[in-house]
Length: 291
Image (cartoon, rainbow, N blue to C red):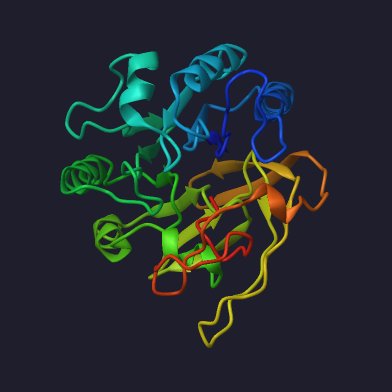
C-alpha cells in the first residue's frame, strides 16, 4: 500500500527576498520538517512545479540546499513559474530523454506513479506536447495491470473561478490518453493555490493549496463578468497525501502551516485577463493569472 506525498508551489526566491511578503524558503523548510516528522513511512515525495518564483539560477541553487533536508526519495517536475533550461543547468541533465521535459514513471508496491511536466515557456496555462502524450500512452500500456496515480502542476478541470483561464490546455486530449487505462486512481495538481476535488469525464482529480499563498475559493459569475478582487491568504500551507491500496485511493490534505491572514491587494500588481483571455487595464483587480 504505497503512500505518496505531493508538494507544489514552493515559489523559492533568492536570499533576502520575499514573494508577496512571504518567506517561501522558510515555508518550504517547515513543509519538509513536517513531512520528515509525520510521513517517514512514505514511499515517495513528488514536488509538482513552481519550484522557483521567477525561474532564476539563484533560487534553484537555494532550492537544492533545501532539498538536501528531505529524508524521502523525491521527484521534481516543473510549473509555469519555472524555467527549464535554468533548472537543468543547476540540477543536471535530468529530463526524460524521450520528451525533453521533467517526466517520470515509477512503480511503488504495485502502483504506478506518473509525473508530468506541464510547463511551457512564457505560458501560464499548462501544455503537454505530442511527445509527452505518446510517452504517457506507452507508460500506461506498460502499467495496464496496475493502478495509476498521476501528478502534474496544472489542474485538468475548470474550478469555476478566475484561474480557469490558466488550466491545462487541450485537457480532453490528455484525458483521452488517460481513459485508455482502466484504473486511473487520482490526478493530483497544485497551481491553483486552493483545495478542490472532483472528476472530469470520469477521471478523479484533486488540487491542494501548496506552499505559497492561498486563494480563497470564490465562484465566478455565471454571466462571465469579472468578480471583485478575491482574497489571497497567508495560509494554510498544505501538502497532499495519497494512499493507494488494492481497491481504493485516498487523497488527504494536511496543513503544515495554519495562518490565514488576508494579504494586501497591493502585493499583487498583476494585469488581469478577462474571460476571453484578453489583457484588461486594472492592475489591482484579482481576476488574473494568479498562480
